[in-house]
Length: 92
Image 1: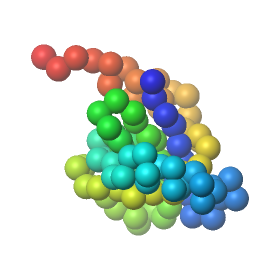
Image 2 (image 1 turned 135 degrees about the vertical axis):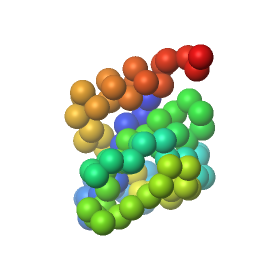
Image 3 (image 1 turned 60 degrees about the vertical axis):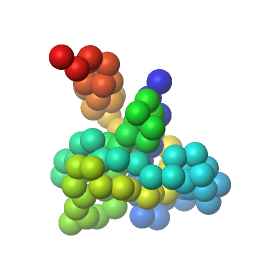
């Protein structure tokens, strides 16, 4: 099952409880994909979180740890489907 979240700077939907839950549950997350607008992280090898970058110049590299506030989903369905398909493929 994939969890989908968006990272934004001043989102009123982002609550302290959501942030604390994310940090308490996952602690840190590893980046598996980073584009101009989005960051996709793997929290525990099974749960994937898709984030929207806070700022255009906010850069992250694959494999770095990401600490983030969590808010409701905003990823387009096409992006989520592509990520699901990619994650469901078995390594050869």
